[in-house]
View 1 (cartoon, rainbow, N blue to C red):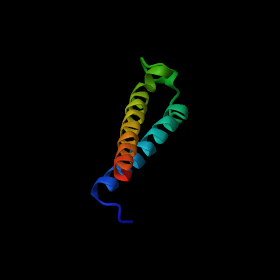
View 2 (view 1 turned 180 degrees about the horizontal axis):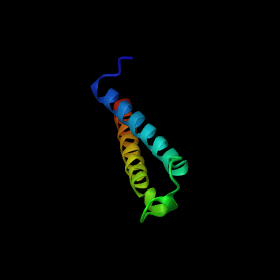
View 3 (view 1 turned 120 degrees about the vertical axis):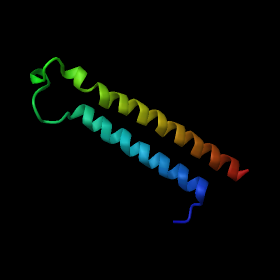
View 4 (view 1 turned 45 degrees about the vertical axis):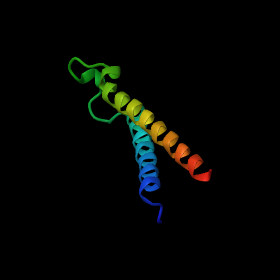
Length: 79
């Protein structure tokens, strides 16, 4: 598709960070099926998921930033 530079960048950003938010949410819910978190020395089940939770939070924030920018771009283009 021929979206142009600005619209293409915004659509790509929304799609990328939406995909990252979904995949990190799945990682948090369905943690890797390796050794149980109780077997990892010094880490409990929550501590194993701290990095994916942070990644999820950042991805969701960036997704909404790009979504807001896309909405603002489209509303100014309609005027």
